[in-house]
Length: 154
Image (cartoon, rainbow, N blue to C red; front, side, top):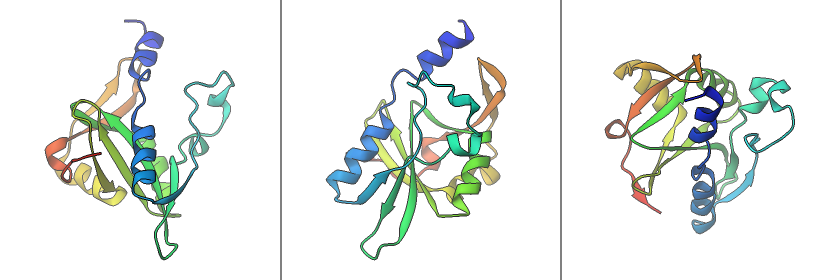
């Protein structure tokens, strides 16, 4: 399969972010959209620095006005965390904690897990480093579902 075709196919269904927003609204969590979703844009988004393109999807507030970033990630089978994205998330996490909203597209369930927990899983479990077909330098770690907190129905 052509690299561009594979990339488009891999990114054609992006349900995690709408499901995260549904979760936030249903649970009356105060939030605002924050990140840049560039996959549908015709603009030269790749010209924007990676750190800006990797801004987390949402900012949320709890009842005491403490804030977090939320990054929504959808997956089928195993959750994939890109090496470069993790490097960028580290920078954002140092400014404000990041919580991942992981959405299992096949089973229609979610879990929430902190950035530090994912880093710890990568360090301790040593998941294989793989790459996407469109680029050998676009590497990711596969995080098995059984390593993650319990998944719940929306």
